[in-house]
Picture 1: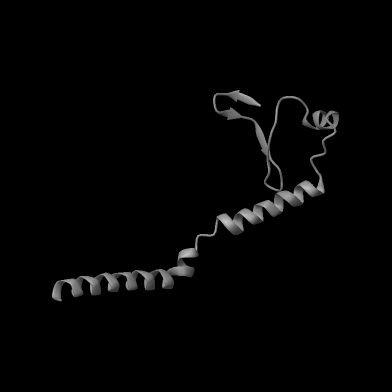
Picture 2: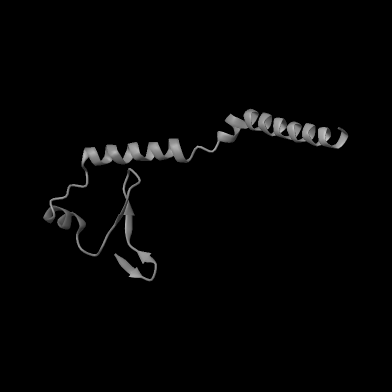
Length: 91
């Protein structure tokens, strides 16, 4: 329910889902539409989706995991360039 420019009415359920609300009775409106917001499958899908996002997209420690490989690659690259420049300059 939009109350002004950039302002909406909403409520946050116990499982963290945000729902927009209006001035009408939400329970009455959902019953008229035959929508039951407390559906187990929807809650399980919401919870598993949140876990999937946390697992795959909020993982920030990848640099700790691959730091030795990155450092070794940079070192080999610098050494290869140094040997190449040394060979061209002195032979």
